[in-house]
Length: 118
Image 1 (cartoon, rainbow, N blue to C red):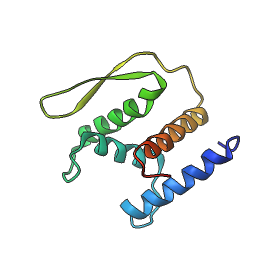
Image 2: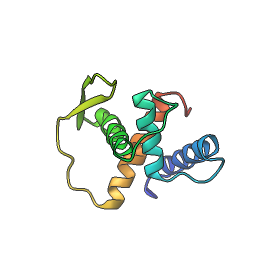
Image 3: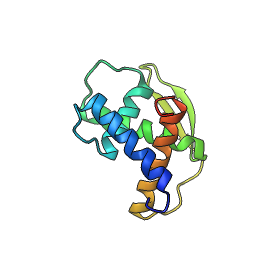
């Protein structure tokens, strides 16, 4: 991520803003932010989730985040209101650092689209 100083700066601003809003300033890691996106996408903001539901929320978030890149496509909402996506194209093999940069880039784009970030 050091190759893209603008992305690094925007990620830090976003991470700080989310940490202040949702964790009383305690730093949120990448997985926690992905979880928050999953809750947002599900739209069931004021309830608690079981462990398997939390994993599904992270899957929803990853699908939604990678949708603009052409990897996933929204398919339907099930009877409980959970969104389902279908795989359009498999992700290329990425090293862990590359995965992290891709997800951070997608998250910054997501929150910019949602007008949470300028």
